[in-house]
Image 1 (cartoon, rainbow, N blue to C red):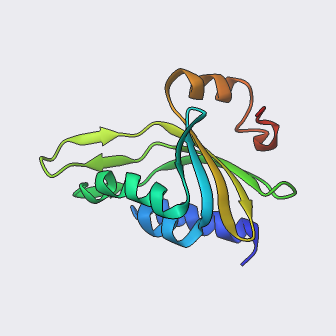
Image 2: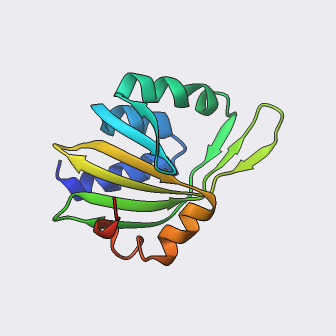
Length: 136
């Protein structure tokens, strides 16, 4: 599967409310995740273990990826996630985050999740138009 097809498949899984399936299929064993530029987890096992309790607690997930931009040459994608999780108490929790991903060998090797003010700054700086321009 080529890079763009893998990204499209990942987005389809997210929109279908299956974020753990997308994670299991596409996150690299030695991948790293950052939350607002702070390391959240290193390695697939650690990152999954930190996310799984929150995702599994959802009674339902209404996946909504608003925009996805791909830089084929750099194998980078960025997408705006506005999915909604429904808790066991029927509370709706709205997600509003930006996912920036660097891929290699068909897997995500680095994912940076942005929320709040840092997300707004990244969007205003044009990250959705030019995902490869993220200043690291």
